[in-house]
Image 1: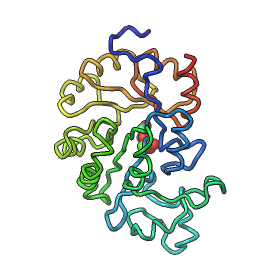
Image 2: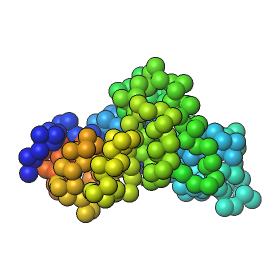
Image 3: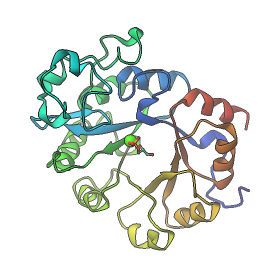
Length: 260
Ligand code: G3P
Ligand code: CA
């Protein structure tokens, strides 16, 4: 039951469109985030990686194969690693038609394009930095990009998350006011030690307990969880007092929020 003071009411819980909302539109595209907002999302979660020429783009997998038409356009470039393609090459790809012909022509956005496209909407962004040895200076680049757009994208409109906690500590030193969320379920007994630079945790709903949420809140941390669109799971998470739920179907979550 919702007994902690910090617990949000269902209406206040952030409806976070996972990968921009990937059930009704192609993931990690501007079209997906725009649709998610129209369906009642508050936040778009996007994944960030780097091109060969170190430009920041929004894409989940380490290869371009699943979510673009790269195999058609560059048939000899297997295994189609994101980090082996320049931004100019990536911008020739279609990131929509694999999902549905309706989305033909939707591109792989750069982080800058995503920020510009959504800046006049009410969207907030949860940006996941995908660290890998192929993304050497990604944190520095993301920090610089956020600095550049900070007038439209105040630090309260953004959060950055990653599985690499050490990298997140470094990121915090570069942009101390941007809230950091850690992926991968930090153990409850480490939360106080992490609270110096961490403002949130993003973890799977399975295994999450009301007690964990309470402990995180005591450290001033938000709890984001996901990914689900099942009303029974959503209601349980709401009863735990979570601050946000990630979903591929923001419309479903919006309707549970309206009629909990
Ligand atoms: O659950 C958080 C989520 O964003 C991490 O998973 O693989 O969808 O980026 P993934
Ligand atoms: Ca993600």
